[in-house]
Image (cartoon, rainbow, N blue to C red; front, side, top):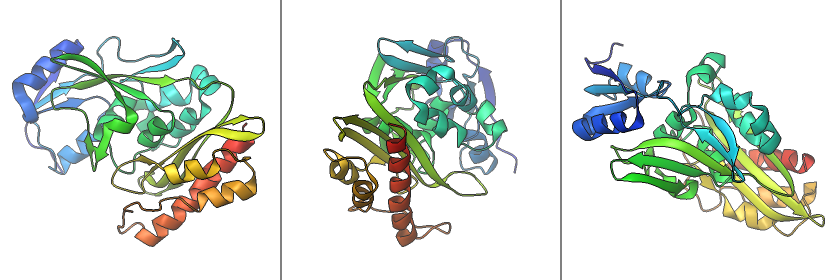
Length: 286
């Protein structure tokens, strides 16, 4: 389909883009990679009057280490992250997440900031952000604020991002010590979105897990950390028996999605399967 008429404006600075957002309110939309917005516009599910292109704003595309943080500019593409030796050396699970998104064309154009702002319930990045306890840096007319990932994803396509604000950076604490990471995903074959995706980080000390982070996407209306699984494995050896017991607690007391791709019961089953897969892979990487 063909979208409704709109005015296109290329912003040269973050401040300029915010000015357009303030001026046009909910009639303005930001364009980065466009893989979330443009399909919605073609289906006329989203009909902006003003389309503000932020993809070429200087300083929004980078990967660097700073103050024990892995810092990603919001316009950094999925492929940039997938192929980054720095990311691979610090938090390899993030390379797995990026590599699992769409196809090569999507990964070359789609951006991490755009994916997070769209907050599709089956998108891959939200699980990775929750598992790594990332901080989403947001800029708006009132200045800059840092929002922990756990407070950013609020519901179905709903985030803490206001209509006149822009994600500028993602800051991820670099884990220390003996850690293993992994991302395991059951792929919807046509779209390559996650029927269930599971991101995890395990830290081991004296043979026992002293820190476990495990987050799901595709299971519920927004990504979430599964504290029942985390608590079940913390303090125990990351062996197959303990991981199996912990994985069985996946998606307990969670409202699970049901659609024509997967029923609620099937998704609950997949959550257990992919929690075990992710934890086992992370344990093998310790």
